Image (cartoon, rainbow, N blue to C red; front, side, top):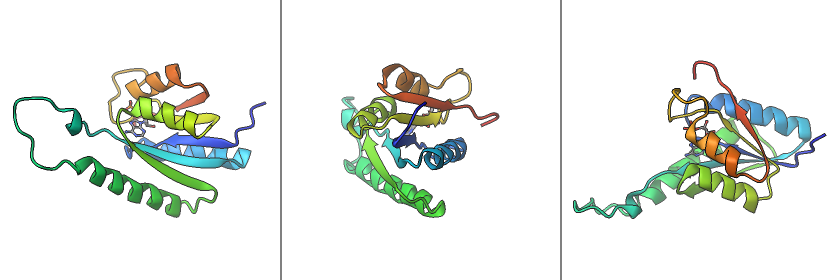
Amino acid sequence: MANYQHILVAVDFSKESEAVMAKAMELQKLYNARLTLVHVVEYTGAMYTGEIPLPEDLDLDQRLAKQAETKLQALIDQHSLANAGFQVEIGTPKREIVRVAAEQKAELIVLGSHGRHGLQLLLGSTANGVLHQAACDVLAVRVENA
Ligand code: AMP
């Protein structure tokens, strides 16, 4: 029988993330676990090597990260979550989610089976990548008509 003490939930702020959060909160309660909400800012401007000059907005990723922090804190407040925190990273979602889970020694990652990257795949690219790379358990929450 699993005994999850630390659960990580991947929040992309899509419509599906409400159901993903609901499942993570249910499990947090069941196991009396700590919950960490993770969002990954996918801005890749810093990696751009094209010919066309980009606008001088090099701190865009930092500003997006700040916005994400505010939104995650709002989610924690909205659900009056105790024993919960958040972490925002910049990079590739699947890679960062797996990395943070390992770093934080989470025993379970909860994420949506799909999110902003569409319905056409059985498992979205993030869910698929996390499932294959994570060292801990992974729960992909299936949401109908998300
Ligand atoms: P997708 O790969 O877009 O189908 O997303 C599947 C699931 O991965 C979503 O429901 C989220 O739980 C998680 N996810 C996707 N992108 C992010 C992101 N940028 N930050 C945090 N979680 C994400």
